[in-house]
Length: 466
Picture 1 (cartoon, one colour):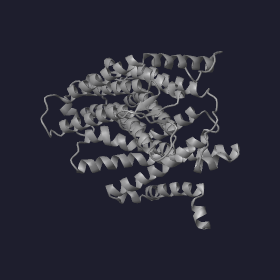
Picture 2: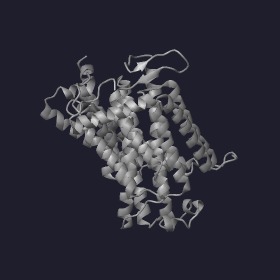
Picture 3: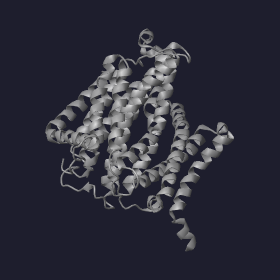
C-alpha cells in the first residue's frame, strides 16, 4: 500500500513527465539520434513533447498564485507555440538570404518556384511563400481544430463529469460552453488584429507597417493584462496544488524551472518531430508543400493542444479556451509581425517579405475564419452547432485542397478560387452572427475601454455585467 501511495504523490507525476523527455535528451546529446529511422525520431521526440506539455501546464497553473492568470496563460501560449515561430523564422530567413524580393520573384511562375533547385533565387521565393503558408496553416489549425475540438471535447466530457462552464440546452446541438467574460481583452485585441490582417496582402507583402501595428497590439495587450490583479486561485489538485503549498521563495523558482525546461524541450524536440512527420507523409506520396502548410504546423501546435486537453479534462475549460485564444493572439500578431524582421536581417537591408497571389488568398481566408470565430465568441459562449460549423468548414477546405494538389478528381475551379470562395462563406456567416450580436460587440469594446482606464488612468475596473 505504501508503494501505491508513493506512486500517487504529485512528484511521481513530475518524475514521469521528466522520464518521457529523457530518451530524446540522451539520444540527442549522445548523437545517437542521427542513426535512428524516421519513425523512431518521431516517437521519442513526440514523447518529449508530451512530457514537456504536462510540465508547461503545471507551471502555468502554479504561477496563477503569484501573477494575473491572463499573464500566466500568455506565457504558456508563447512557449507552447515557440516551435511554430522557429519554423516560420527559418523560411523567412532563407527567403531573405536568397535575395527574394517582390521584383525578383515576379519573374517566376508558381510552378517554377515550387520546383526550384535548392539555393537558387526561385527557391528563395518559394521559401517566402512557405513562411506565409506555414503561418496561415498554423493559425487556421488553432481555430479549425483547436477551438472547435476543445468545445466538442468539453461538452462531450461533461456527460461523465461536472464542468460548471457547460450548459446543457434543448435543441439540435444546442448545448454550449460558457466562457469567462474576462477573456474579452483577448477577443477585442484579436478583432483588431484580424481587421488589420485583411489589409496585409494589399501592400504586396509583410512590411514594417504591419510589424509596427501587429507587434504594437501584442505589446499593448501584455502591458494591459500585467496591470491586472492576482485573482483568487481556484482550488487545484495534483501537481499545481502541491507546488502552490510551498512558500513563495521556493514556489517561484520551481515555476521558472518548469517553464524554462518545458520551453527548451518543446523548442528542441518539436522541429524534428514535425520534420519527421513531413518525411513520413512524403513517403506516402503527400506533396511537400501540403505537408509544410498543414502537417508541420499540426505537429508544432501539439504541445498547446495537449495542454488545453489537460486543462479541460480537469474541468478547467475556461482556462483551456483562454490558452487557445491567447495563442491565436500571439501568432496572429507577433508571428506575422516578426517575420519581416527576420527576413530583413537575412536580406541585409530593410525589405518587404513577398508572397504570391495564392498566399494572399491564404491570408484572407485565415482572417475570414478568425472573423467568423470571433463573431461566435463575442457573447462569451460557443455551442455544439458553432463548433461543428468551424470544424466542418476547416476540414472540408483542407480536404478539397488535398484533392486539387494531388489531382485526384477534376474540379471546375482553381485552388485560389476555392480559397476566395471559403473566404466569402466565412465572412457572410460572421457578418450575420455579428449583426445579431451587435450589442455584445459594443459591450466587449466598452469593457476594453474601461480596462484601459483602470490600468493606465483613474477609471474603474470593468464590471462583471459589462
